[in-house]
Amino acid sequence: MSEKPDIVYTIVDEAPELASGSFLPIIQAFTGVAGVEVGTMDISLAGRIISQFPDRLKPDQQQPDDLSLLGEMVLKPDAN
Image (spheres, one colour):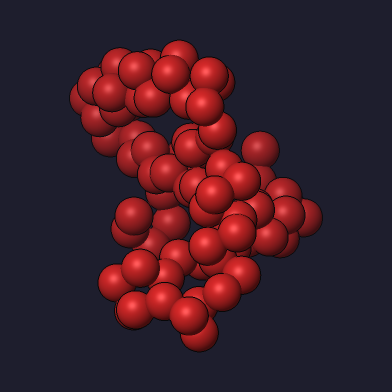
């Protein structure tokens, strides 16, 4: 993901991900024409667990705590 996407699309668990994951390319196709960037953040249970143990993972396996980052993001006035 780049520095700051225009839209943040969340990655979720299991059944919701089936619908959500198939819809993301459609959103990206429409927004790309308009110059709007869509980034993703992983708020799945697996993603949240992995983010809590960076000391046990190789650098390429580590990931940020996206749920906490989203919590901080929504407090900013430019969040919608």
